[in-house]
Amino acid sequence: MLISDAKLLVGQIINLEYTDRKGDILSDRVEIFDVNFIALYGPCMITDIGDIRLDRVVSAVAIQESKAA
Image 1 (cartoon, rainbow, N blue to C red):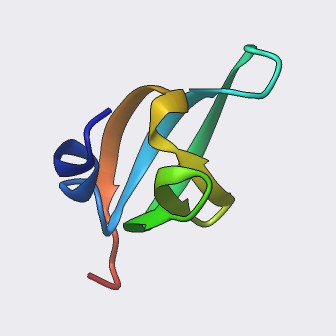
Image 2: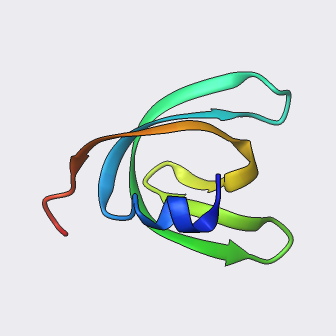
């Protein structure tokens, strides 16, 4: 996933599929707070479940926009 694509999801709740360190695909419903570059990790989504590297994202489908936005 590109940073420009991820920034379009900021403020939304999405269904996110991503790989863990072992390569297994995990699926969660998350709220995206920000997309930022984190030293030693690279571009990451800042979510309510933690930071997720963009190179680990398999798919991201928007469910709804956040009420706080």
